[in-house]
Length: 215
Image 1 (cartoon, one colour):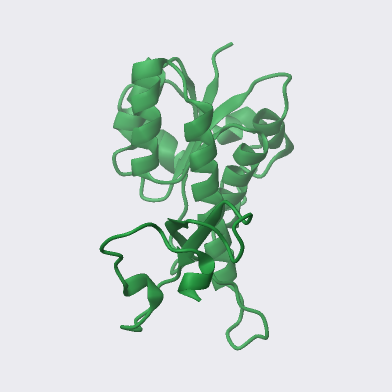
Image 2 (tube, one colour):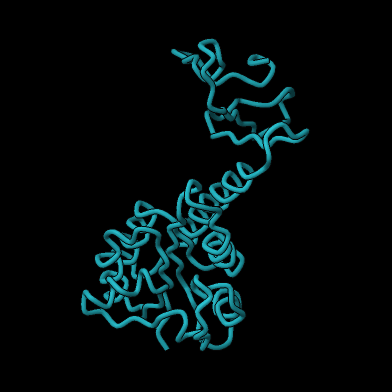
């Protein structure tokens, strides 16, 4: 049985090329209606999610949050979805819980999870050169989709609350923490318009500072 790749993309521009490459890499395709239509029009065999789940009642949205989908993403028996490419719809349109849930199930099942065309290009490059997706790339993509999901759901919280989520990006490796034995130590930076924010300073020479130097 071939591995399955699940595709469910808002504005599925360009997914025909991605789907073609996945078929060439040995995958069978599973897709939501809006993604299955252009894939089928490109002459590729594709199973619609409603067929896979045997759920044909029209709820106005694809039946992706279904036990058969979860089993295929996290289980070891039966058909296995090994790759998920979900491009969630923008927050301005709504709160895409279902799409991000598919991505989180893929992460839970240690499958490949991708939510952008750029991520899928990295996946396809590895499939073409190595015949498989490395654990390193899978873990990197899992981290990226988890951070994106966390940021999305944090932004749904009503403003003015007593709790606030702050997200930061890795900036540099430090020589040590407050003490020499506190290694590794890293500095992370948040987006800031402050012209004197630490992230705007550039080290021109010398070794990386320790935490005490920065503080």
